[in-house]
Length: 439
Image (tube, rainbow, N blue to C red; front, side):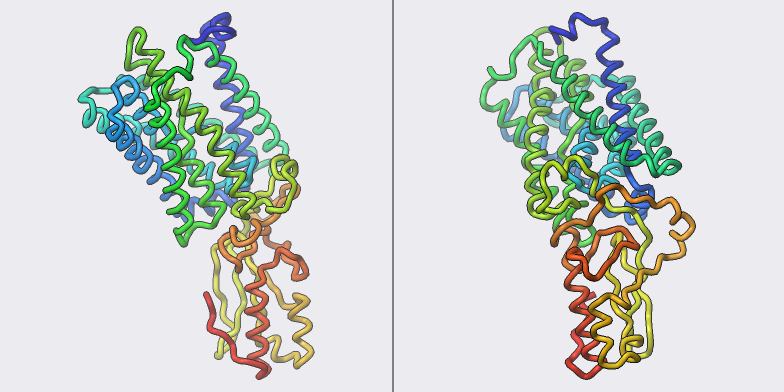
């Protein structure tokens, strides 16, 4: 299949080098994730649920609709069904890291989808291939299990490094990024000597290969954006995970399903889909960043965005002290960190001059919950970590900066929370009517 450099090397070299680079990439991405943030994503489970639903139900169904509507011949249709049924591409973590979507959710989804693909990939392939073509797919379960074992081992190795050596997270992130670049270059070299070029196919081939990626991106982002339990960076991460497929696994299935000249035709589908996702997803992530939908500030330079990690720390839930008519009550919010409301009981005791104290942040308090106090010592901020910018962080009342870093004079403080605090203070002094709590 492959000529050039791949043909000149022993047959075991290419898969060995590819697996080593893949292992290094996943270790680096997992090791750069704050384990508190990862536990929080699993605890909330909303993002993981949406991601798995999109990966194993939405995209395979879109692939089947594309094959049926365009009435693709089996050599293309079966290969496309194999692509849309093979989630777990490790590059999804890399892209989320580079453009600062929610990396913790991306790692959580990759872990779950990789394990679930042992069952769900064959189920989707068997179901849709029998419905459309009446043909049972040829699956290399050894290759499938081997890929899963490498991914799972790499992820848990990286998480162990993050847990026990939190000061190495920034270094791990850079190592993972370098492995991703080398893997991309290596893959381009070994796949460039195909027997048939990718640019001499009929129009239906290109349309059928591009449509599933575009439709899945549009639908998954729209549903993720509308979901009240997902922040904007989480919705972006879910979208990337949905669209980015394991084209290496799909290529293996395509090659095993055909013989002779048809093998080259079948292999062209996952190869071209790989080009499509590498072109579309970075563009989507760039637009998401400029629109303030990732953790990186929209006004930061591109070099800073891709060279620094802006991922938030996991942090505890934040207990926000608020006042009620009967006294002070505590409410817990699930975001990584939020601006605390001022205690009106404290403000009332200060007199008129306390308004200046409120504006200076004198009564802003962050109270960790008991479940997170036992491992606060492990929290080590990444260099350059900052909150999501604008409304992309889940609304104007959300400050995604790490707990303990709240400063009322910072431009990243949520203006909605401060205005709500001042309105409550005015009400306590008879200066105005307290608005209804938006929460």
